[in-house]
Length: 269
Ligand code: NAP
Image 1 (cartoon, rainbow, N blue to C red):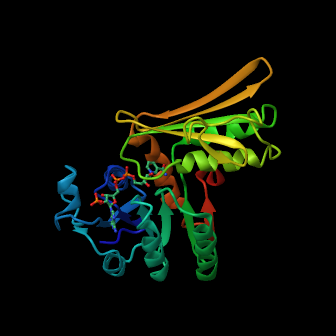
Image 2 (image 1 turned 90 degrees about the vertical axis):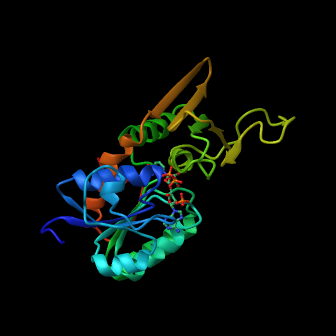
């Protein structure tokens, strides 16, 4: 089953919206080899047949540990849910398999703990709240602009099945912005919310607003205000394919470094 020179990948959450797209990407990428597909509540069928890709010889499983043991995987790519990703990562670390994680809603403490384990084991891992190159650029440009226009509000818009709010991308954007501007309080010091939540979530004085509606995939606007002007930086993922070049790149690059990298921007110039 093992093909020389290819990175052996187990996709976790393989029957989800993102997971299915990841399976398609891995099957088509000449540098990657699909060696496992894990999801819960799935029939043990050939994943390629289920996704209309033809036979792959890889069958859906609901047991990650067993799949890692049998498949001799190099990498797991996890797009599951905030409540199960933690267990999945600890399982992959136990088997010495590098995690590439797109699942959002992971606390900072977990990232630090995983980094220590990865360093000890001498292998790499990547957690990226957003794998779309346009979104990485949007975050970088917003952080750059906040040096000159430090009053910022972030509005993120996602489909209404998303479990966590605000999005991982919005939090990452805010983290990048606070590295570039002084801590400050925005708006009128005496402002009062007549309806709780009207001013959004607070991140070191910056406001984050989450919109959830059917029809959206993943979108974000960063609005920066100055005297007599505003600057709006917007990114739209209009299909889940937008994330796939970043996911494929991460699955290969994670073989080359040690410890945890947080954010795809750290793998590109
Ligand atoms: P989704 O469609 O709900 O997919 C999640 C999949 O994980 C489902 O098939 C679910 O199965 C499965 N699952 C749940 N518990 C599991 C377990 N214990 N073991 C194995 N599989 C399990 O969600 P999605 O839209 O694909 O999004 C997945 C995650 O990716 C979310 O956190 C989202 O925010 C994130 N995301 C990240 C990016 C990025 O660029 N980083 C982009 C888009 C989305 P059931 O259906 O049976 O529950």
